[in-house]
Image 1 (cartoon, rainbow, N blue to C red):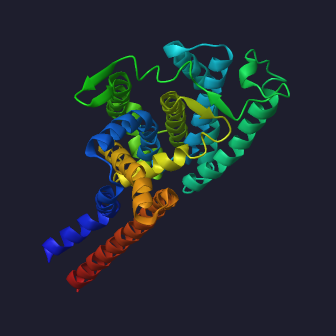
Image 2: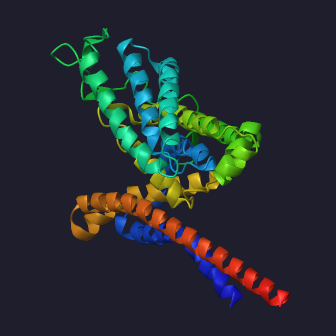
Image 3: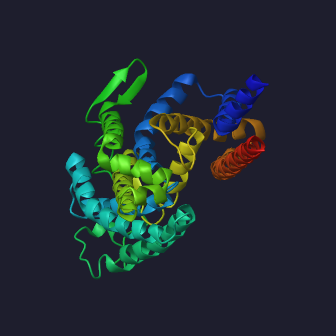
Length: 371
């Protein structure tokens, strides 16, 4: 019975990962894609997406759940890229300039987001999601109306024909794959963007180190129990705000890395799905609202993007329409978030029920002993 319980608990805790492995393995054969092609895509997508997913870790450590407000950081990074293109700053210098511009903006956005989330304790995820919609409106207003009218733009190639507002799509040729090609190794048939992967490794080292610092330990204590942390003298609200600020700044850098790899930017909606796919990836990797590790990030990015690569081709081969795979990709993305949240709520309820039963058993034993 004990073995069955352990198996059941393992399946329950890893249900999302198991489902994704099964679905992915089932989709690869009908896709007709070679293993070499899939592996090369995974190497590329690891470099492109992992930094963004890593930005989610600190708010989870601090007990704030999945930071859908990371979209604010993505918008900050995009403003930095727009200004880099405006002043014709290309190459790695352009990326550094974009990061330099995006950092103070993302710090300000992170502070605002953290302050708002402190007013909505226990409802951080939905609050962050709605806040991202509001700030998106501000971003659209600034980029569509103020750039070129209030803020002078020097590069006419990125401005709309009316004289103000930024074009819908920007060519990032000046900074395209500037980071990826600094150190590009060929390993057999595979091209490996070593510089990008080293940046990601550096962030992983930072996360491991940060968790051991006093601030990192404070975040862990706040994430475990805010009341106990407050009683221990930890500034709970300040600690939570710092977690969101760091996450937002990292999201800004992550969006810059993502867009330099893509080579173009949809000015008004490139950031729309940033938090959605990052959250889906970390959940697919086995993380939860309260618990996450570096391994969850890498497992999730690989599993989610293997599925993203193979499903359109599998849909084309099986049903004669690649759009079937696209619809399935959207369904999987939203579905995994919903499934994870449902499983988290179910597990929390089960834990509460077990704790209640143990308390009842203890009280019954105590009353029996008293008699």
